[in-house]
Amino acid sequence: MEINRLSLFLGRPHRHGSDIQLHSPTIAQIAEVGETTYYVYLTLASFDKEKILLRLFQLPGEDYARLDDVADYEVLTGHPAIRGHLCTALSFFAREAVDFDPVKRSFTVRDRPLATADNYSKVAALIATLCGVEQPSAAPKLKNARARELFDKLARLRETRGKTAGDTLELKDLLSILCAMNGNGIDVFNVAELTIYQVYEHFERLKLKESHNRVLPVWANGHLREHDKLPEWISRTKL
Image (cartoon, rainbow, N blue to C red):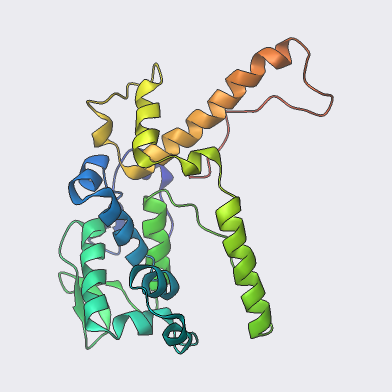
């Protein structure tokens, strides 16, 4: 599913299929349901059985181990309560009712397929992008369970230690910083109209420009080391 970065930058929805739209929620919409609930919806929309069963539902590790070799979609759609939570989460991003068709085993909008066993991972990646979540690189093919266990441990270690200063800021802090920056037209009276994608994209650009502005006087006075370069802010963002 190709993402139209320009449309997301302008706050427009992504068209999924012929007539289903998926949206990056606005700050006002996130505030309305509650920030915690929003992150729960985002986790559910990931279709990641580990995050959903272990983190959200606190399933004991020994019980989860029995499901380790079963496909995420099969596990998550096999329980009526979890299916209901998934429908609620997907409805938030579709901005209309999402139902589950038990015969076709698909999530539908007005009887049209949204997520199925064949495309659910792509739908999850799409929603993550709409919400400004950077996608991880593909995991390598591992020869055995021991190699996979070590890989997962290293991934979790990188996740906890590899965060930048911007990642540790709460959403409210990001919004406050955007409002405090001069010349961008964002203030406390209109920041709620931004989508979450716009917030993260704008903040990423702001960090690039701020880094450039801080180093510029050092560079201009010839105090950078020989191999140091002036940070460039006129560049492609990750989002």
